[in-house]
Amino acid sequence: MFFLLFVFFLIASAFLANKLLVVFLSPDVFVALRMGISGILLLFLYAREKKIWVEAKDHFFMLFIIAIFTTFFPSLLRAYALQFISASRASFWGALEPFISVFYLRVLYSQKVTSNQIIGIMLGSFASLFFVFYRGGNSLFVNSLFCLADFAQISSLAISRFGWIKGQELMKKEIFKPQQLNGFCFSISATISFIIASIRGFPFTLLSELFFQKKFILPFAYTIIVGNMLAYSLYAYALKHAVITYVSIVGLSVPLFVHFLSFFLFGEPLSISFFVSLLLLGLALAIFQKK
Image (cartoon, rainbow, N blue to C red; front, side, top):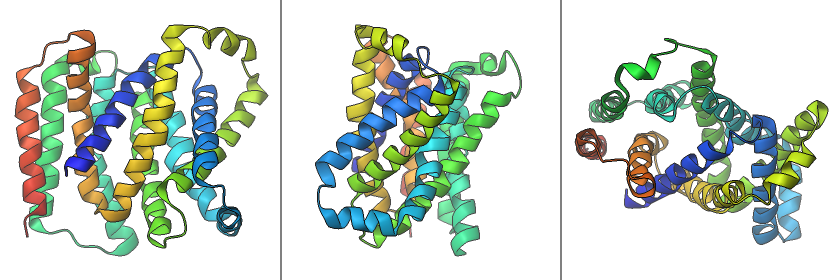
């Protein structure tokens, strides 16, 4: 559990960095740069052997499917959503992820869920919703009850979860290591995003200016190294060895970590809801694991 919490702590920190970056670039350009650089670095570090590229050629269709479902579509949709809704509102929809995981596992693999697992999922989701509502209240939906950005955020969760389930299948066959899988998937997603961005007109002039600005290059370097290369490689490793529904429940800790990091980075006070939700989430994980 503590390993997964560390993984989601890193993902939460990258989430804050991404929130700072989406104001500079359109979603397709942001994904092309972020995934492209991460993919190239991962492949350079972990895919130098010829046999890895032979395996990639033989499994290209599956890699392509995993790439567009885990990184391409979710990254575009999340980047779009964060331009129009708050991080708290995006976190609100994140409470659906464990239920999405259960749905996929039931439909794809006919896996049954025990009563303790159902209670754990419901309590974990309640902990997340309690935290988000306590902090955001009525301001969460002040502009609209439901908008296209909300649909984009929900879609990103559903699409991403399906992609990671397929990625889990491939990793359990011991064909690719987590870093190699992410390297290929990031590179494929970046290539598609770059083509789309080029058709619209790739902003080379803007990028040449941004890369000399500290307020852009620091969070960008962080999201590349910590968010993509480290956190997602650890996340893929966790999926290879853990039950995906359990991983989804632990993932509900991301809004709590975002709040915790905001306390240290921006001086935002820790609310009572943080401690209550943390306690409820811990209880939910304990109940989920109980035989």
